[in-house]
Length: 221
Image 1 (cartoon, one colour):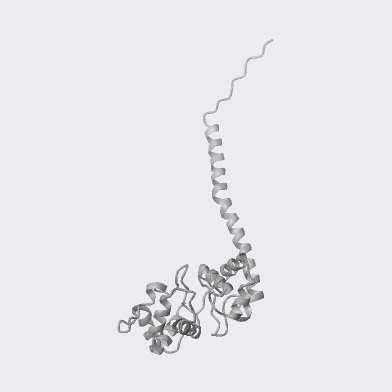
Image 2: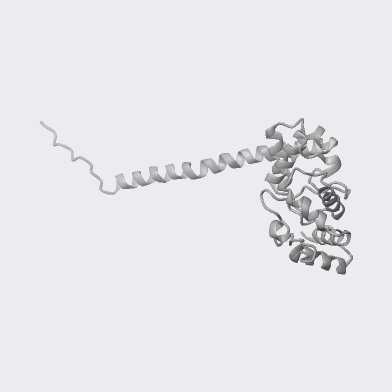
């Protein structure tokens, strides 16, 4: 006896559903997998940076970038690409410091990137001033400059909150004494690794203006 032919299943809904499922899965892989890989890589880089900071930088700058001495800059919250450039410049001698040259020259590129990432992700701090009038003068200089000496406003480059850009440093919350030291080095042409405009600007600041603007910057966060 011949069995009857079985009907062929031809679903009008299953195939589109399966196609959609495969498409959604492919989209998930395309979008989530790279982000997961990047997150894992960032976590590994952060861990490397934290280890390097503890081993080589903590004595002066603090493991979390909060240096106790005003002679050493705070690195917490500093812009990552700016930190990378400074470390490279210290390593090559483009920025002069015998101590930092010894520290930076032993780092490979991966170490430089890791340190910069680590410190850029730390929480910034500030140094509040108890001289409100001096801070007010500093804010005026920072925001408006001095037309009588040809001094441009600092915010034109460093921004209204003094957080800088990828290439320019964050100044907000930095130790005022350290900022004064750097302005003096720019003024005396002892520091040449950054924009030459800083040599001109620093030379036009009076002693009062220099002290006032750094007090103002230190009080920001």
